Length: 164
Image (cartoon, rainbow, N blue to C red; front, side, top):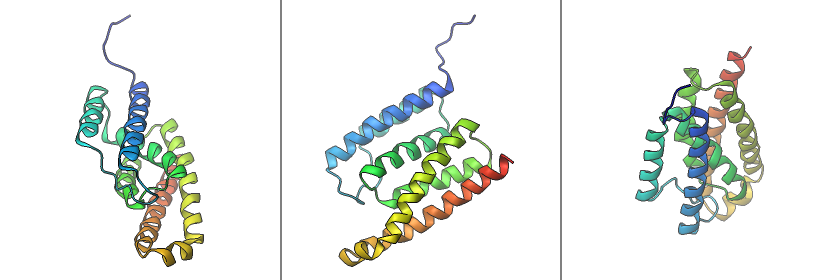
């Protein structure tokens, strides 16, 4: 039996997602974010808290990217975020998948949430004429959606290929 102040990596990741969820909800409430407007910016204080927690929990870039992916996607179901927010996260996750840095449980979470996210994207595409007619900014959203879907599909294919 050894005594240690180190936490289990799974617990640290779980705690980080919970902390991110709380701070993210605070940011959305503070800015009174409308659909498709949140740009991924956190207050300086929130960034410091999240960074410190990631360092103390010895979380990797892959861990924090997966946490953002999971939390943002869940929120996106209730309040659509600016799709440009997802692109840098998906690029980090693409690197993570390419280098097999996710364990099986994390891959499963990514795929499950990715399927829901993809359905939201497809629904937006189906209704794009409604959105585009009301605001030209939605053309940017449509472009970002297509890029996101490409990244998600790439990761799905890579994960599926690695598991065969």
